[in-house]
Image 1: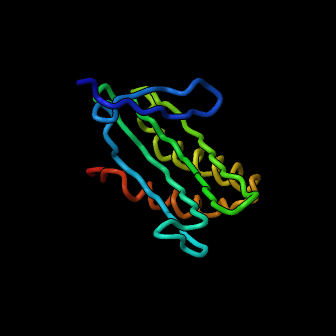
Image 2: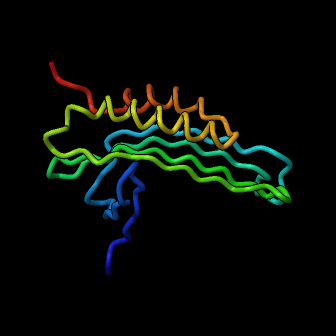
Length: 136
């Protein structure tokens, strides 16, 4: 049986398709906000903010963020914003700077949709804090 693939949207380049088991998460941070009157057990509005870092065994890293806004309100528009970067193995030391860069680009992109992007400021710190500790 073929393993499930996932697509990661990158900034200013083609998206990449990966096998998640070959690109395990090494750090992540997320926030979710469900609000509005509940219909059954479904919210009328749901915001989700995520920042993730995945590392392949060969040393390459994916740093990406996704924001989704789903609404059941009549006339409301769903929103999806995604940004990310692919780092080569030699750019491994740039993970923290890439988390900051992706978080900043997501902050600005989400704010342009009239949705709150400020959550990405907090997620940047949380994602960096979730990275494997450096042994010194």
